[in-house]
Image (cartoon, rainbow, N blue to C red; front, side):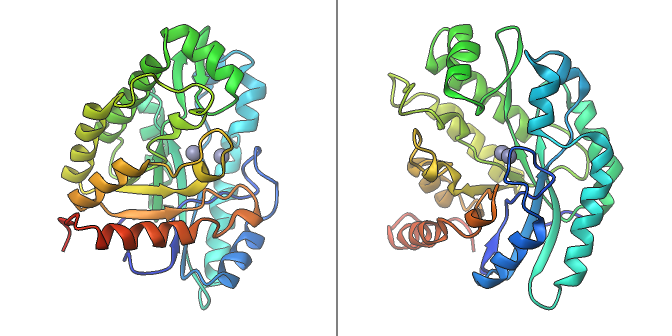
Length: 294
Ligand SMILES: [Zn+2]
Ligand SMILES: [Zn+2]
């Protein structure tokens, strides 16, 4: 069953495995060994779920791209079995949580709900992310490549601001969506749409501020959490944590729990940026921004 876990513990809440075909292919066991070595006490395996064939048909280059982005349907039970085995094997050294990174795809909620209904009894943690938006000639993956972002999304919506608006609209829907009792509790990399911000920057620095504030309030109302995802720090055209500073401050003020996520796609990513997480949490605690929590 999915639930909240204690926040004091040295924890990584967002990681990938050999079931991710845009990662390094290294076995999850190697990631786990690295996590133990780095002093983590809790570690969630949150592999990307299989994607609906409907999406694959509506994406330029669909089958090849989807094969890179997510495991095929038949591998999901193998992935869960692998995660459960590791959990048992390492239980005296680290608490592994069996989880998934679930895509919220607007309009395809019934697929996602079905998937979660089918394997929910084996899930202990999860991240809910938006990676896909409608774009030129069908759907586009928002974090695939800068050229694709420009061609498939900016040119389609008309401006960077409009792409951001569409993205946050999808995020808001993801928070509100009824995906059943096994819906992930944590919103993944809330500002992933900033991945190419140094190349395609919105002219309006306050772009989507009101929508984001509304989203944070909805996250709070539903007692959901935020993925403090450091992957953006290491993206050459992003250079910031997902979510960005002012959002972290607002989230802290609202008392929304934030869980460090390395979003590791290779073993050497495990634990990176944890110092940035600790530093941010310390400075928020000392900043006079009052947390509503506890
Ligand atoms: Zn990935
Ligand atoms: Zn993701």
